[in-house]
Picture 1 (cartoon, rainbow, N blue to C red):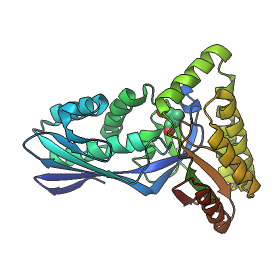
Picture 2 (cartoon, protein in one colour):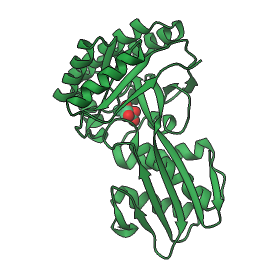
Picture 3 (cartoon, rainbow, N blue to C red):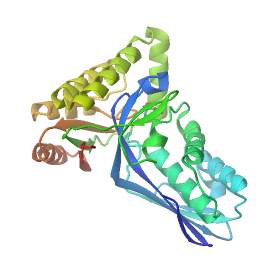
Picture 4 (cartoon, protein in one colour):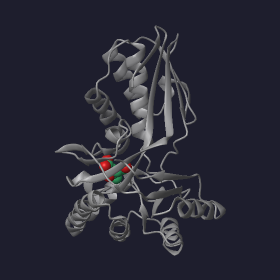
Length: 307
Ligand code: MEV
């Protein structure tokens, strides 16, 4: 994956991710099922420069005035890799606050670009370690699912203590994905769930964990209808816990009315993206168009097949 262009330039890439089932519960040690969203990417180009600076849609200027989490991260990477002054140009078509793993993808692509510029090989473990450092300052208590899923190209079952397993499934389904246009902060969502668990106990997380186990079985069996029902049940629980949003609920209802087998938020929630499962691609595309007409965008259709 690592690209060594020349001595003065290093390039790094990462893609987005979708959590099919298991967000939040994965922080509490349960499984999450996730898919790569390779249609959406972050690219970082690192070059030697006279002053360390960042060029991105989020921030333009000298590293010294950059947001604290970014500044700390780049300084640590430079120190570890003995990299002198650099410029980082980050381009991305992955929306922020959408639940699609943008912060993990930004960290992964910066890491890969800096390792490449310093001509050092980057193992998956090292890449995940650096993403974890970034995500810990961005949202406090990352499970690691976003780091893993934005760095690998196969769908996985992820568990923060047991590691990950690649999914083989005969399923042929399509996920319609669209952004509610509400920025969802993963940090706030993770903190909100922590308060909920403290007050109400962790039964909801256990139920989400059970639904993820059932989803694994349905994926192996190719049970698309069962998987859809599980997705909607997960949405009901996430709503109870408090991480949905009225706009997300409306989008979920739109999807179910349009004949989706199931629909839910994906990622941290409090806005962000909604995913809806269909057997036919044309139905998924039709929902994306309907969502777009209502002002939710951009939309993707993800083919779930992975044999
Ligand atoms: C965010 O994409 C997924 C969460 O479960 C947080 C995490 O696992 O780090 C909400």
